[in-house]
Length: 70
Image (cartoon, rainbow, N blue to C red; front, side, top):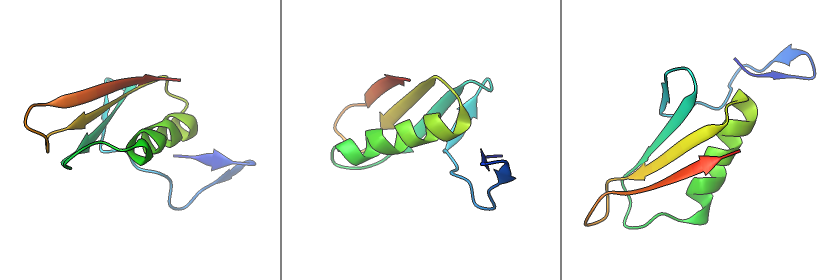
């Protein structure tokens, strides 16, 4: 649930997974990760008041991941 100026938003951001109620897990399957993927994870961190996100990409030759801390 996301609140803005005291009101609950109807369509809040929805991350792919929330692990242990504290880690946002964003899953991708693209040829390469781009800055927009990291910006999306940062947005999820901001609206959820979490501190840690992992962006994981399964679309490259080997697994690529990045840890994002707010």
